[in-house]
Length: 319
Picture: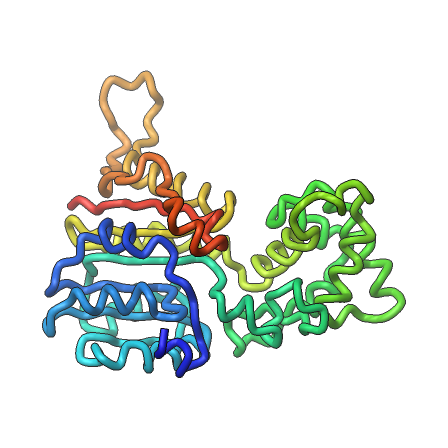
């Protein structure tokens, strides 16, 4: 925690023990943390490696990169920190001199730092916060651009598909009505529009009404689901024999993508069920270790309520 305070970037590592156990870390192995964040998981991977081992820690957030350099300095001899998106993992690993790795970790959640730093624009709790939500501040498009620039039908799609909010149509309508008067610039502006779309009895229920809308816009802005879906198979293929990939998701859409692709990698055969033998030639890439998602322990939930929606799935490569 002292290093977290020193570098100003902090994040509570979700299901830390479960991830370390399932990665089956080999001291001389090569590992990738594709979403380094506050470097909590990275630190514990690095401490299990020998001087011959390597951890490649990737993050697109410049604040995380600077924090990682401080948090991981103790193991600098066995760590390569790269500012990038995990979608470039294959090229990053190759440039480090390797054709495969022994383990991959993805923690797809938003960091505590990002949520609790109003100027990053991820929070709906600070109404003065700007509508930003960029995980990579090099991006030019922001949440403000989406809220003010998308058509009403595009907003409906985003809030329905990525927020799974049943009031998606009314929310999109209220956003459009609000911006006709003046552009929405702050979290408070968006929250106000969302609340107008909610029936009074729904506003009295527990939970913040804007949570799903903020989630939806963040996912759209950062292209989160497409990046995961387009690159997960390549990451499985990047694993060495008996290498494992551990993925922590935080909502049903992410979890469904991971579950379905892991199943496909385990059983890629496309032959009709009534065929006596496989003729498509597609071979299994390994096996699913977690038939059901691994959930945080009750003790962890008591310490960190933000872990409530976290789910961990694990796949092991077999060559």
